[in-house]
Amino acid sequence: MPSPNLNLGKVRGLRRLANEAGHFTIVALDQRPPIAQMLAARLGIPASQVSFEDMMTAKRLLVQTLGPHASAMLLDPNFALPATLASLPARTGLLVTLEDHRFKDTPGGRLSHSIANWSVEKIKRSGGDGVKVLAWYRPDAAPEVLEHQQAYVRQVGDECVRHDIPFVLELLTYPFPRAAGDAQPPAQTREQGAQHVIDSLREFAKPEYRVDLFKLESPLPGANLPAPDGLAEHQAAQAWFNEMGGICREAGVPWVMLSAGVTPEQFLRVMHCAYAAGAHGFLAGRAIWAQALQQFPDLAACREVLQTQGLRTLQDLMDLTREAGHAWTPDYSSLDRIRAEGDLCSAYA
Image (cartoon, rainbow, N blue to C red; front, top):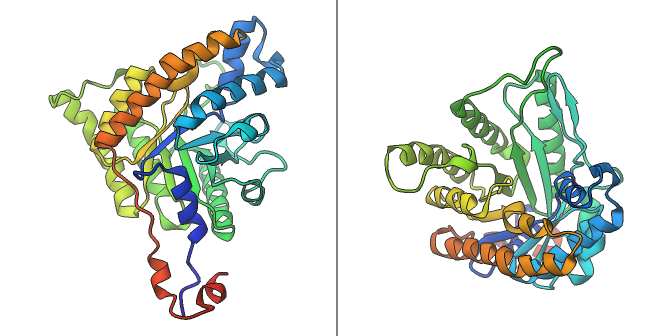
């Protein structure tokens, strides 16, 4: 009898998020505070006063311009999904955010949770091709914080298995809140920060979390990575990326890089290192569209910058991906066990 673990929904979902070559060239539009802050700066108001309509307008413009060129778009359910679903191209995959950006900050670390009244099931029912969760994580957080974050990711992973939809996990390290009387949070070295990225990935690469695609930050600050010239400094930086790639390869999970607000030129340098380590694409936002939103509320000017600088950056990233990225290949081997009429129907839980 065939195994019940066919997971065809996961395979088809990942296939929808990738382009024809098997690369993930995804544009992120689920940012909430960063976009609100950009619009607020242009409008001369506090970020808390940016209107729902202005957020909808900005995200609608970004999808209309960039959507036809990306393999998929990452959308949040509170703004981007209602604003842009009608204009999302049929071939462009739909990755939907689950986590609330309003994490709980405690002395021992950050606690993630889902958006109110939102779930893996609702993402699947609304037509999503994948579920994305951002989990704030650093291995030296308080034990109760680590337990909470691990349990949250594990629960989402189980739900994604139940609903047979890809689970895309984004991991981000963060500074601890400063203690009373301290001028700033305790500093850490570049090497300590890189090790936190590696150790976080190593934890969630365990099969118990059921991750199908990792969205990872650069282990070293993307704003000052050395040029890919093969010299000692570059080789030292590349070693961190290689370690990330090795963890993902051993786990059998594809991975992409996030842009973390660096410039287009800086992100291309990040991607050079990532592709040399085996990355399968990118999931980038501000590196592609941040400059365009500096023109808000002049929508014509926003569109013009998107159609020039934004699409040029996206094309540069796609060109590099085509040349150096590693292709993800869908695995339909579970179908080899289908031997008779009705096998698939009876095996699918």
